[in-house]
Length: 148
Ligand code: HEC
Image (cartoon, rainbow, N blue to C red):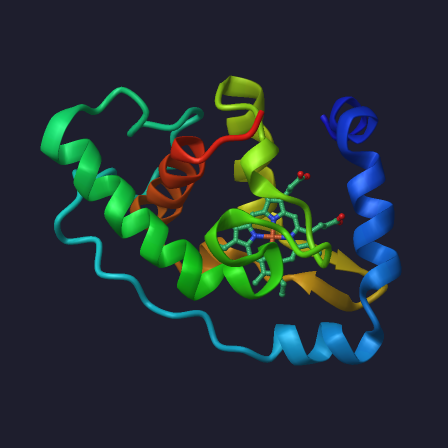
């Protein structure tokens, strides 16, 4: 799984790694993730789904998912991945993740495992702080601004 993605985005990683000073990592990692109110979203339960369960929603439901997702992104991901999804180079630009099954698989892997190397936390395990409703709403918002 990692191998197939590295071809496409390996360059982002190198750039991301080179631009992260150890001070930056500590400063980012120390920020407490913000709880997100997901009570207005369709409930998904504890078990993680394989693909974005919100992708096929429509109308007002989809609008609400995107609204919550955009706000959750800006509160929890933007400090590293960039405001509005536009990466400043610290971390990969998430608008470029494919809006399909492959992108979902990689998305789930990262939000559950974060990115930790040699004890340094480059990205926290976001699923320890946000439920799957919040994380899939973020994914749905990202797809709405996709730059694939
Ligand atoms: C403290 C900084 C930080 C925060 C906060 C953060 N990330 Fe990340 N994220 C990173 C870094 C750095 C990488 C690249 C990791 C690597 O190359 O090993 C990354 C990688 C990813 C990837 C893989 C992207 C790719 O192109 O390979 C996804 C998906 C992702 N993050 C999602 C999220 C989401 C969703 C949030 C918010 C809920 C979030 N991240 C919050 C730093 C962060």
